[in-house]
Amino acid sequence: MQYGGPDHHQLNRTLAGIANHPNVAAYLIVGLGCETGQASHLIENEHLIQLGMPGKQVPEVLNIQDLGGISNTVEAGTSAVLRLLMRARGSKRSRLCADKLILATNCGGSDGYSGVTANPALGVASDLLVRQGGTTVLAETTEIYGAEHLLTRRAISREVGEKLLARIRWWEWYTQIFGAQINNNPSPGNKAGGLTTIYEKSLGAIAKAGTSPMVDVLLYAEPIKSKGFIVMDTPGYDPVSMTGLAAGGANIGVFTTGRGSVFGCKPMPCIKVATNTPMFKRMEADMDLNAGTILDGESVFTTGERIFEEILAVASGKKTKSEISGVGDEEFAPWSIGPTL
Image (cartoon, rainbow, N blue to C red; front, side, top):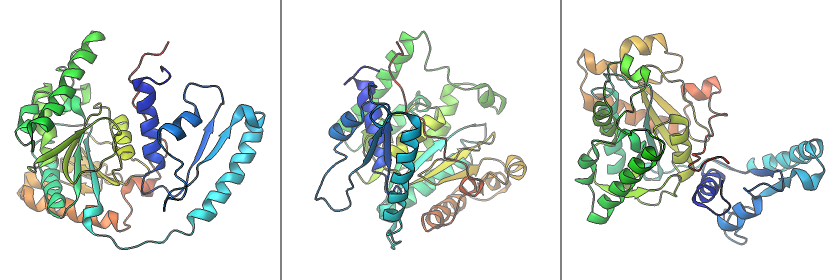
C-alpha cells in the first residue's frame, strides 16, 4: 500500500465509512504504531474528529507500540470497550420512514434461475423502495459488464452515464494488466448452476436494479448521499462488495443466491433470497425468503412485494437468518487495489 496513494485513501474511506455507519454506536481504533495505515492519517483525512458537532464522537485510539505491547493493549482495549458500551446503552430506538433506508443489493452463487426469479423480484422491491423516497444500490461492476448499456439508458444525465462507462473502462484496463479477461467471470459454481457467459450473468444481475432512473455512480465505499437508484463500483467478490456498500452507508442488504450462500454482514443486516425451491428447502436455516415460487406460478411483482415487506420488517427489528446464526462478524473485507511489495 502506497502512503497517500489511491489504495491508502480507499482503505481509509472504507474504515471511516464503517466507523460512521448508522448501525455503529461506538468504535475503537487499534494500530501497531509504525504501519503505513496510520490511525492519525485515517482520523485527520476522513475527519473522524469533529468536536462540537451533534452525533459525532471522538474515536478511542490505541497504538500497540506506545502502550508497550499486546498484553497492555488488550487490557487498555477492554477498558475502552466497557466505556463505549456504557455510552452505547444510552441509544434509543425511534420510528423512521422508509426514505431513510439505503438498500445494498448483491448476488452470489448465482444460477440459471437468478435472472428470472430472485433478481427481477428484488428489482421490484428496489423500485418500491425508491418510490417511498429511499435509496437502492447496485454493485459488482464486473457483473454488469456486457449489459452496461441497459443502465446508461436510465442515467439522469450524460455525465452520470459517462461515470459508469469510465468504471467499465477502468476494469478492462485493470484486468488486462494481470493477463485476465473481464468477460470470463462466471465461477465453476455459476456454470454448474446453468450460467455459461458473463453476459448471461450480467443480464440477470442488473435485474436487481429494477427500472428506476440511475441518479449517480460512486467509487468503492464512497458515501451514499443521493436518493434513488445508484451504482457503486465494487468487485464481484461478495464479501468485498458488501463491505464497500456497508462502508458507503447502506443500512440493509438483500443477497440473492441460487447455489446457496450463507453470507452475513455486520453492521448491515443481510436478507438472503433463494432463486429456487429445492435449494431453499435444503438450506432453509440460512435462507430468509424463497423466490422459487415464481417458477410455480407466483408473479414476479408479488414476490417483489414480499421482499419489500421483509426489508421493512428487518429494518424494524426482525432478525435475519444470518443474524440468528451469528454470521457476519468476520465478513469485513476491504478491497485492496494495489500490489503487495
